[in-house]
Length: 298
Image (cartoon, rainbow, N blue to C red; front, side, top):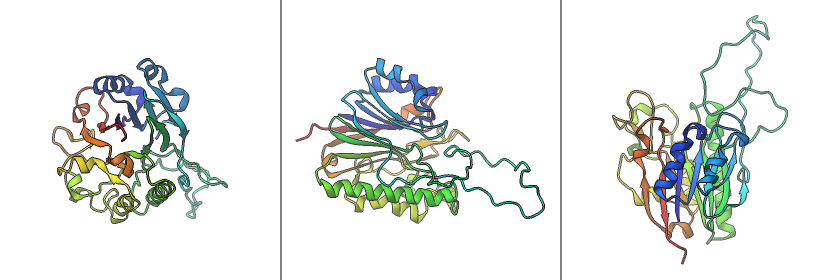
């Protein structure tokens, strides 16, 4: 079975590229992140015409995750056990004489959260995780929160989100040590200094903090193996290049797309490919597909 993960950065904008990739690569199961659409907006017809079933969860123009499979898709879950929610905190009322209803200065745009809302209920769970059983493997398509800035509530949310996922994943292995689970997607963590073009450029920023790196490596302590590095250990092997400042031609990239495999899946992985060519050409995503080849189970 060929399993791939790809942050497509808007599935509607890139559906033709995604279908072409599926057909060219022979991918059986594709975990998709940042679909950026509601469920009713997802281009199901294009995938179905190519022979794929699709499960998707998306609530707005941000986030969104999906799985496309031509080897079956069952037992779909749109969140993992204990997945925390998030809502942007509401600023306190002004104390400088500014009228409470005065228009506020617009904040910087953030591509992974909706508008601020005051809720008296638990914060909503975002469309960042989707699980389904495909060809006997429990595949989770994951879009880990960005974190935005150290000290920002979104950073604490990111760490809580990773911790809850780690706890859920550990529980699955505790229940069945031979369970076949693949945790794949955009992890928004740079685990090693050699996973970034210039570590100094990220000093004081998210993705490289000790807390984030510890949260990422905690999955290994839970019994999972990050199989992309196991098969592609070369330093400065990237999966993401920003659209700005000629990052791709200058190879100013990041390695942030990964696959943690349970022991039963790890032993099936025969190879890993990072399809760098998908970053080329018109209309490319800023991420590229990461592809795992799995042998038939013993």
